[in-house]
Image 1 (tube, rainbow, N blue to C red):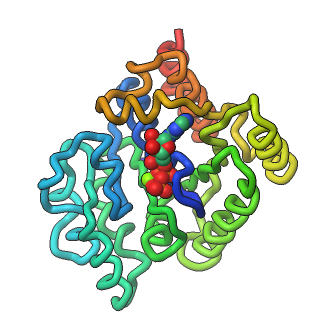
Image 2: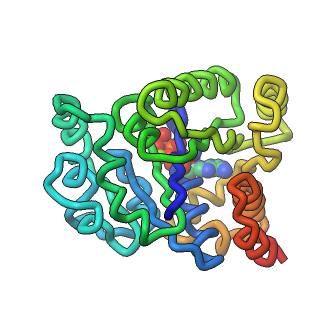
Length: 258
Ligand SMILES: Nc1ncnc2c1ncn2[C@@H]1O[C@H](COP(=O)(O)OP(=O)(O)OP(=O)(O)O)[C@@H](O)[C@H]1O
Ligand SMILES: [Mg+2]
């Protein structure tokens, strides 16, 4: 049975999609079967993972009931396009609207070890669907002012999902992303998150670098484009696998680091 993880943030541009893309890559390199689900009408994850922009069906068809998740699984990615914005509106008028993704993914949980869901930068119905469908939530926060506020709002939505439709949902962690530790902003963001959330904040931070935009442009993984920076994601993967109790996988990530 797959472990399903939603990656979310209250704000846009915190590095969610890059996190899902790179973790997908790391986990596939250690031979885990990973399904990446793009739940953002911007379709950035589908783009990063090189899905044909014309590929159909997409997650929009899945959520409106026009296709199964299996049909929309294009080589381990369920892509999104702008059609998802309309699908969200249609879904909003349906009974059981918060459960659509959970029900759709259920048949695929046998085929994968890990399902990673990339949420849109809003805490609306799509993100709620992701949280209801997930075992774990990973919050991405940008190493800037207001990081704390963003995390608190994301936590409120997680709490809402837990208190209503998904009591088993667990917070896997908070990752501080796009961090420049030479700046006071980033250091203060880390310190305040540590103070408020203790060890729920991962020790590993993702450093800021222009190499991320460059590697996305070249359709390369940061692990290949800049292995020195890729170390950050290997560190994050290792911490997450530890929390998930996936010891063998963690050992394999350690081997990748050498
Ligand atoms: N560690 C990093 N350092 C510098 N830039 C980064 C880093 N990670 C991602 N980026 C860049 O920041 C931008 C936003 O990243 P990304 O798309 O992953 O964020 P997001 O949270 O998914 O955004 P959105 O909320 O719009 O979906 C992209 O241009 C990406 O290349
Ligand atoms: Mg994104």
